[in-house]
Every structure is written in C-alpha cells, then in structure tokens.
Image (cartoon, rainbow over all chains, first blue to last red; front, top):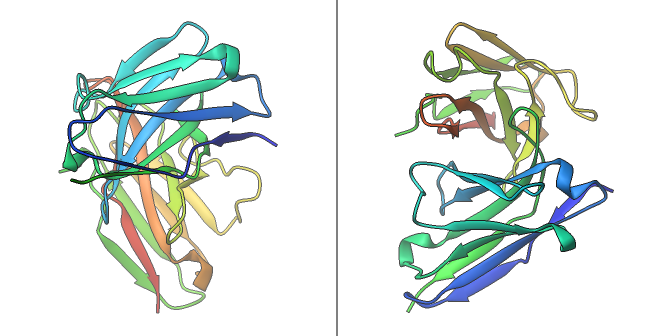
Length: 118
Length: 110
C-alpha cells in the first residue's frame, strides 16, 4: 500500500525547536516529490513548499521562506519539516503529501498536530 | 486572502446538483491544470479531481471537474449525505512559484 506516515502530535513551548517527519512507503520514494501543507485551527489549507528526494532540491512558498526548513533523507525514505524557534502562531496541523506530476498531491498523510503553548 | 476565490459555502438536498467555482488569474488557472481536494470532517484532505477533470480510482463519477479560461468548477451530481465536506481547488502559480489553494467551500447536505 502506498502511504506517507506522520507522527500524530507534538507539543512545544514558544522558542523551542521542532522537526516533524514524513515517511513514504509502498513506492519508489526518490521518484516523487513531497509537499507540506499547513492548516490552522478552523482555517483552510496553506502550501509551505516541495522537496525532491532525488536531489534534495527545495522550493518554498514565498509566505514561508525563512520560516521553516524542509529537508529529506532518501536513505530512510523520510522528509522533514523543521522550525528553529516556534511561535504560538505555528499551532496547526501539518500535512505531508506525495506529489505526482505536475503538482498533484495524490497521497496524503494523516497530519501532525503541532501545539505551541507556554 | 487566498489567490484563488471560492464561495465559502454551498448546500443542496440529497439528489441535487451542487457546483463550486474557483476563480483565479492568468498566472495560475489560466496557464496550469487544476486539482480539487475533499476534506471530510476531522480527516486529512484527499485528492478528488486532478488535471482539471480526471477522477482518481475510487472516486464516484458523480464528481466532475471543468476549467475555462481563468476559472474552474467542481460539480457534485446526485448529492449524498457523505458528500458533506470542505472542498479546495489548487493550482501552481507561475508568478509565485508555488501551489496556491482556494479558501475552501463547505458543502452542506440539507
């Protein structure tokens, strides 16, 4: 079965760092890009960026450039989304999705709920 | 404020046809293909329509998509109670070099 698996939840304090993961299975991980999407409580979907596992090339949404870091370790079929200093406004569900050409998010993870609170 | 404009809500009775619009510009819908995602309550989004009008395996044929110029539409024919969900259009924007989502449309089955 083709799937991308994410941890369920993370709870952090403002100023702390965090890395969440997205592990692909059931397909050739290096062949498909991985995208990240944010959904704040009660709000719509926001695109953060895309990474190509093949060459680690990353494209960020202009709205999120410098706010997060996207990386990948293709040896373990895992992509990552990282924050160096969390803010309360980063509280949201973060989804990763496999991307088929050109930009079709065809397989979604269940999402990681990130809660940032003092 | 989303780059793509969708109505915030739509509704219909079981069996009716509901249409959701998605309005963009020449840098996104006007030059790239549109995808639609369905998000059931409390669930992750899932692909509903890709490349303007293609249905993934398993998606009922009562869902259809179309595109004309800088606008796209999603139609649900024969509305069913399990179609109550949020629906999002999405497309690559050449000016932003990014995927852009519509604000989402909440469909209610009366």
